[in-house]
Length: 150
Image 1 (tube, rainbow, N blue to C red):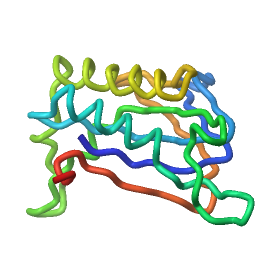
Image 2 (image 1 turned 135 degrees about the horizontal axis):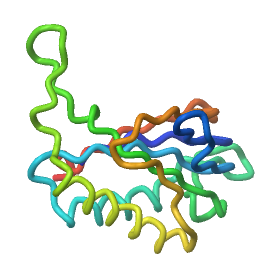
Image 3 (image 1 turned 120 degrees about the horizontal axis):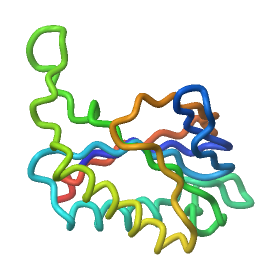
Image 4 (image 1 turned 90 degrees about the horizontal axis):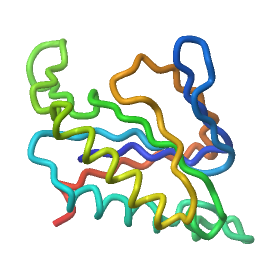
């Protein structure tokens, strides 16, 4: 699994011109699930996301987590995070998990993160054509791949 985590002052997802989900201060998370990913990957990444200290403390040092600030989270599935760009100019998505694997792992990630945050995680719609808007605060953007945790 691969995540792109952005510290935001606000973020939203619209589908077909209508607002679907929105958050204030917190994390905008793009979630890519690849073949071979497991529940353990989702659980590890949820814990890592919740505990990541990327919000400023009273001295301006990135020392607080989204839990510490009482922030929100918006998680959007994004199969393009699994792209292989080794050959040619057209990315290949052959490593992206199919719906039967990707949906349950994405849902598990969101559920575990919600439990850790003590609040619902807002979501996009799996497989939908979504328009994502955000104000990246900092900017702060972190990429985490569960296959690189060892």
